[in-house]
Length: 116
Image (cartoon, rainbow, N blue to C red; front, side, top):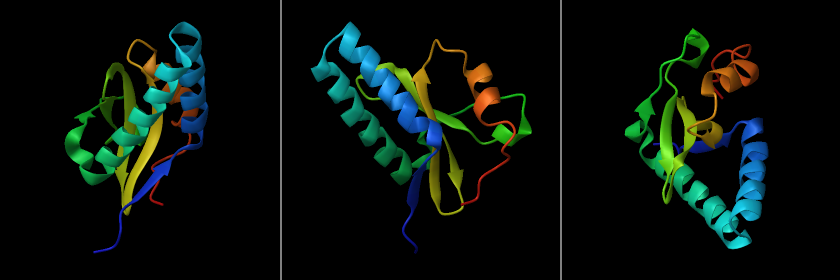
């Protein structure tokens, strides 16, 4: 069996940087670093068990199959991802109170499904 691959969409780095900056300002640098560590743990868990997340419903068929899973210890921060042929693609990480639909429409609806 081929090794499964974790891909991060280009928006993920910016999202993680923004979240870490926010947490460092609002809480502490230690909390921000802890969040980043836990986000990477969530990515690894998702790669091992991609169906662990909750299936999301979007209006766009291009976002069919997207799931969400929380970052352990930061339950309101969600990792949005989808299975691809050879693994998992992390699409974004955002707070559950953010306008998920608007953000996904802006970043993903013109791209179509990714297969690698």
